[in-house]
Each structure stands twice: as structure tokens, then as C-alpha cells.
Image (cartoon, rainbow, N blue to C red; front, side, top):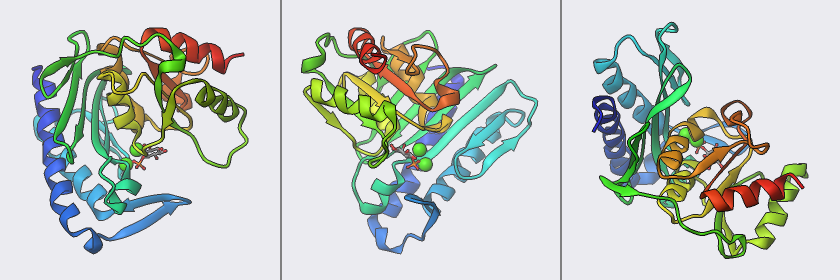
Length: 256
Ligand code: IPD
Ligand code: CA
Ligand code: CA
């Protein structure tokens, strides 16, 4: 394993211990609201601090971007760690075991290392650019599905919006076998990478929701783009990730 990935795994597992310990006494966790339907707990904050502490110990000159505390460290470094300490906080608060820690390292705006750790299932998804993707150290690949009608897709969109793209999501949902909206984009992306989902579409997501998962999907043989087939998904927050054949079918549906 690449030494930088080893450190990222150590940080993700440390956060996992904090999360697992706290979910034994969920009712004691302090929850606050960051905005409409957007919650944060003291555990999100504790986990992010623990992750950054471990990363900083090895890489004190790097930059850090975490969901909860924003930017830390040098603003001049070409290395940027992008962290979501708990993706799926709403699930976590409800004891619904579908949430994960996400840590990615970018170098000059390219993601080069990625870890997604699901502490409820003890599943560790990892990738280093050019070296493939792994689940608990075993190589993973996207599914071989090539028929949209037989595919299982993950989606993230807001429920009541009349957004044009979301209307197209509904059309897509009608065509595939089924859609799952399980509340953790990083797990959805990890599941595309290991073939549990054949594709994923999301709208209005943040860099820390997408950074690690995007590399794990592409290293597993999948494709990632925005809705126009361009690589602007980090800026727009709109993403398609899928096995190659399903990817082109989704892109086609969203653009016609
Ligand atoms: C949320 C999850 C969820 C997505 C939301 C995100 P958080 O992240 O990624 O899948 O639907 O838009 O905000 O807040 O639980 O880290
Ligand atoms: Ca998130
Ligand atoms: Ca989060």
C-alpha cells in the first residue's frame, strides 16, 4: 500500500473507532442544525479533529479541507486532503447503519489517494491512482451490467425540487430495475466501485462527498463525469458514476 494511503487508512480507522463507540449511546450525542435538513453532531467534529491530527503528524506542510472545520494548514501546498468525517450524518443520528468516513488526497487538483471506511460493516475501500481499487485489500471492479433496464442505481436528489435534471432522474428511475437513495453518497460511490450498484447520479454535492469515491470508481474501471460528460463535477457538485455501458446510457437519458 502507498505510504500516504497507509496514513489515510490509519486516520479513517481512528475515526471509525470514535463513531462505533459513540453509536452505542446515540441518545447522549449532541446534535445541532447547520441549515435546513443539515445536521452535525459532536461526533462529526471529534472524528474530523482526530483525522486531521493523524494526517498532520505525518504531513505537517500539507493543506486540509474538512466538512466541519473548513481549511487548515498551509494554503500553499499542492497536496490537499479532503475529508468528510461522517458522510450520512442523518442516518448516523437515527442509528441507520449506512454512513462512512471519507478521506482523499489531491495533488495539483488531481485525486491521487482515496479511502472510504464504513465502520458499521468494517468495510474499507481504498485506491491509489494507477493501482486499482480494493475492498478490505481485495481487488474490486465495477459490475458487468450493460442493460439499463436491469440495472440498480443509486441517486441523490432533493425530494420536492422541480429542477429539470431531477425530472430526468425520474425518467431514469422508471427505466432501470430500481433506485436506492440510502443517504450516503460516499457509500453509493463505493458500491458502484464494487459492483453492488451499477451506477449513481447525484446533484448539488460537495467536494468531500465526491473526492474519494470518484477515484475508487475510476480505479475499479468505472467512469465519472458531470451531466454533460465533462470533468466539472467537483465544481458543480453534479455527478454521474457508473460502469462504462450504463454510464453512456445515463448520460444519454440526461441529455435528451
Ligand atoms: C450528505 C450525504 C448524503 C447527501 C447529502 C450530503 P453529510 O452528507 O452525502 O448522501 O445526500 O447531500 O450532505 O452531511 O451526511 O456529510
Ligand atoms: Ca457528506
Ligand atoms: Ca459529513
